[in-house]
Image 1 (cartoon, rainbow, N blue to C red):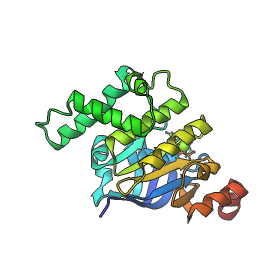
Image 2 (spheres, helix red, strand yellow):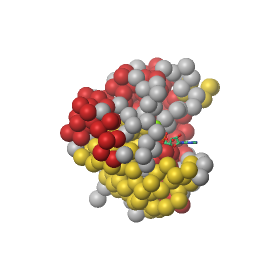
Image 3 (cartoon, rainbow, N blue to C red):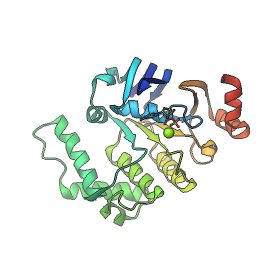
Image 4 (tube, rainbow, N blue to C red):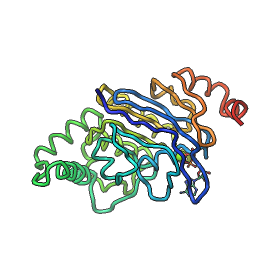
Length: 254
Ligand code: ADP
Ligand code: MG
């Protein structure tokens, strides 16, 4: 059976202000979900809590991954379990190439499993990286660039997709910036996710963008409003949202 991420009645405060007010969501390996909602509804808060960001206080509920209590784990431990969280605002690391960054990430995983591990050899890593980049139709020179330094919005997204392809997570959560989200970046992520989708990958794509269905085909769509998931449905739900906008949600749930 595949891995399951379970968010149970999650309550989260930021600076003592309640932001998430009882979120329930289940994402399984092999499934694709979209989490949508107006700005300020709490989507990024949920992503940050899944990552283990210290600024967010969980005041109630549970986060379970594969039967393990995530709230007890550090961000790197969560990642090693097979949870991948793309950063909404990726940091630049001058002097570290994307390739080196990816190799370090693989090595630290291997060492966590086996402290004696010497990590992946350079030729083996090169082969792996080349295969992943070819699969995603990426130019090989991209891996030689310094991580996120001077990257356009689209290139940052490309780097995230390559990280996801290389680390082979069981469940990936991709939070799109609402500000600065452009069509190009969304298309790149969506195409990458579509290619990587399969029985071994579960995805939760978080976006404010209503026309997501033009790019990505989520099986399940969830709408967050004022800290709760207020609507669950199939692709038709996103179509309805495109037609009626978020005012329709506000009218139903305010
Ligand atoms: P969304 O991603 O759906 O636009 P967010 O989760 O970013 O929503 O924000 C939900 C609410 O939580 C907003 O009112 C926002 O101002 C507040 N919030 C989120 N993160 C922080 C933070 N680090 N500090 C203060 N307020 C925050
Ligand atoms: Mg957000």
